[in-house]
Each structure stands twice: as C-alpha cells, then as structure tokens.
Image 1 (cartoon, helix red, strand yellow):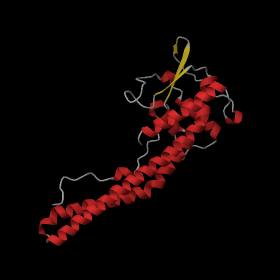
Image 2 (cartoon, one colour):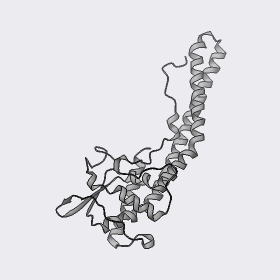
Image 3 (cartoon, one colour):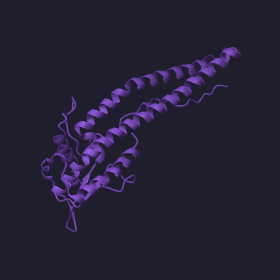
Length: 235
C-alpha cells in the first residue's frame, strides 16, 4: 500500500480531532473514558506528550483487521488471473527466444504481435486492479478514521495529553525521528476503539498492536503481479 492515501486521510481526520477538542463534545454513545495509560509519559514544560502510530492503530482494530482481510480475499481471484496472464506472456517470450529464428516470417510476426497484445492487456488490467484496490482500501481507512477520531480525542483529553505525535511514517518521510515506548498510546487507543465497536477479533488473531510492530493496512495490491521486462525484445 502506498502511504500517500494514508497521509491524506490522517490530514483530513486531524480537523475532526481538532474540532472535538475545541467544542469538548463527547464521543458517540457517551462511552466512559478509557483507562489512563500506565506508562509514564514525558513532559516538556509541563506538557504531557504522547505518541501514536495511526496506521498501526487503523490496521490493529478488530474492524480494520477484518475489513482488510476481506479486501485481500475479494481481490484474490483477480490476482490469480493476472498471475496466469503474466505466466502466459513469459512463456510466449521464451518461445520467441528459442524458436524465433526457425519460424517463417508470418509465424514469427504473429507471435510477436500476440506477445505485444497480451502484455498491453496485462499492463492495463494490472493498473485498473491496482487503482480499484487502492480506492477500496482508502474507503476502509476513511471509515475507520471517522470513528477512531472521537475515541482518540476522548483518550487524549481524559488522560491530560497536551501534545500527541504520529510516528506512522519513519523519518525522513515523517517529522518524528524517534520516540519512546513509554510515550506510546497506540494499543490503549485500539483497545478503547475495540471495546466501543463491539467487533470481535478476526479468527486467528493472537495479539493487539503495540506501536511500530503492529500490522498496518498495507495489503498487496493485484498490480504487484505485473511481469518484469525481459532483456530480449522481438526483432
């Protein structure tokens, strides 16, 4: 998964969190504030500092894990189709390389045309699948973020945080160079979200996210099956 759509989604949800903080409005459903983080956070000039991996939080929720897994399964047939087409193209290229000199002009020209046609089709289908996958993945992220924002806002205010850092993107892609586990509230926020959502953990889930080690919504899109260019070109 490309990180750009995550960054855009987080930017958009930042306004929601900011608005909630200014109005002091409670989270939907009037749920009780989650328990305070047991780790001792750092303070800078009396400001309590926390850190969160927003990408890990999204993928670490029971809802996120369920929906991203479902999305992967949905695109599995298309991924298989593209892999089969890629194999077919590569086999035709091998045939051209090994038998091309023995073919008459018409047969060789037809084989070259077949390779070009199938390769263009593969490229086009892979790009279409990639775009569709990214769009649907982005929809899952946006939906979860909209519900995660008030939970995060409630946790931050209830526990007295004055500054919260998102370290989803490691430096230099992101502004945070390093952070301490003592500052990390990712797991606590995910636990609070799961308790409120009522969504059960997906089958086989054994652990909750804990910062950078958590799973992130970075599934393999079908476009990953596009074949690499070969060194031999049809003459």
